[in-house]
Image (cartoon, rainbow, N blue to C red; front, top):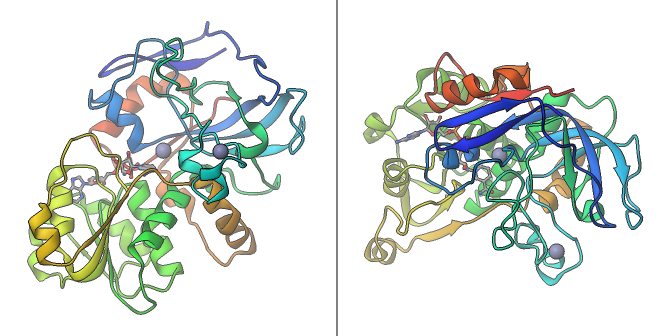
Length: 348
Ligand SMILES: NC(=O)c1ccc[n+]([C@@H]2O[C@H](COP(=O)([O-])OP(=O)(O)OC[C@H]3O[C@@H](n4cnc5c(N)ncnc54)[C@H](O)[C@@H]3O)[C@@H](O)[C@H]2O)c1
Ligand SMILES: [Zn+2]
Ligand SMILES: [Zn+2]
């Protein structure tokens, strides 16, 4: 099959000779990927901040059609159109039961680590024609055939992640909320904050075109990180950038007693704010992988009913790219070049 392969930090290759995944466990499904995303999280191994070994297919955001199921799968069947959330979850273990599907006892991530290393329980990813999905019953989410594929793709990760980040920040309706970092996750956080009633919603990013898009999505104030002195501190701040300076900016903008919701993946051993600061300003810090599968139970009906409107085509600036352009698109995405905010690949 066709797909991308992680070779080493800074190097992704396009291959046409990859083995097609097969059913390995009775709870598996195989999904033919119609769309898969390129996400800020893919940049961590690409930039060498997280380990990944040669041979791993990257990608953890997918939409597609089920083409095979194992004998124990009962909630999806061949032909169903599905979202593949970025981590698998069983739906029945104690963390899943509590809604913490991100920390399912049997959960695994797509597209990271080394699939041949038993100590590294990552799965081959979705930037390929097919992906194997273990725990299919607990993981896959059926969607109508007419749901816009760009919206469906954002629902596999960035939108539920942002939704949860905003909920963790705890905005009270009509209270201000600041989003630091306006990549796809931060832009989705602007949508979520507006939908959940925060006001005003403020966006911060060094890239002018991302600030402009945040304004179109409903941010009433936007600023470069160098000009935050004109931004009032807020009770709720979401950090969706993933760099120490951005986290510093976010921490500075939380008012005493407020919450800093860090949704970026953490790849360092300390936060950009000190325990003394957290104590002296009575800050609440929240962090961690989003439970996208759990959040979809609440969010998908809102999107399908139109209660939450998702102008996905504005966020996914490079849509339906062939996988063969993957190596170049990784490079351009990492450089935040050419107006590129998010890529969707169309492997089928
Ligand atoms: N917690 C989860 O479950 C989860 C899920 C998905 C993504 N993530 C993480 O969320 C983060 C954002 O993802 P993304 O796809 O939007 O990434 P992205 O790389 O597309 O966006 C990051 C944005 O931060 C901006 N930025 C950089 N420095 C900044 C600064 N000093 N101040 C303000 N903004 C700054 C960039 O210009 C960019 O627009 C990443 O760390 C990603 O790994 C976490
Ligand atoms: Zn992602
Ligand atoms: Zn579980």
